[in-house]
Amino acid sequence: MPQSLFLVTLVVDDYDRAKAFYCGALGFDCLQDEVQPEGKRWVVVKPRGPEGAAFLLAQAVGERQKAAIGNQTGGRVGFFLKTGDFDRDYAAMLANGVTFLEAPRHEVYGTVAVFADPYGNTFDLIQHTAPAAS
Image (cartoon, rainbow, N blue to C red):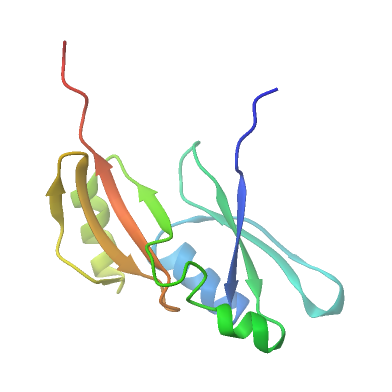
C-alpha cells in the first residue's frame, strides 16, 4: 500500500495571525477551520495544487510549545515550497509583504530564494530546472 506525508504540525502563537499569513500573503487554501474542545481549533492550510502536504496550524500551549515557535527545525530551512513559476510567485509574495532573506539565486537544480514566516520559520521557494530533452 502506498504511503504519503499529508499533514505537518506548525506551532504558532495565534490561529488567526498564522492563517492570515499562510492564506493571505502566501495564497494557501484553508482546507479546514473547525472549533475543537477547550478553545482549540483544527486549522489546516495547504499550498494550491494537487500535490504535497498541508500544515496543521497549532496554537502553542505552555512554555515548551511557545519556545518552539519559529524554531521547529533548529534554525535550518525546514520547509520547501515548490512552484512552477518562480518569478510570478516571488513577485506576488514580495507584494504581500513576505520577507525574503536573500535574493533569488540560480543553482543546478533550479531557482531558489529563502523566505521566513512571521515566526522565523524558513522556507525555500523553489522552481526546479526542467529536465534536459533527450
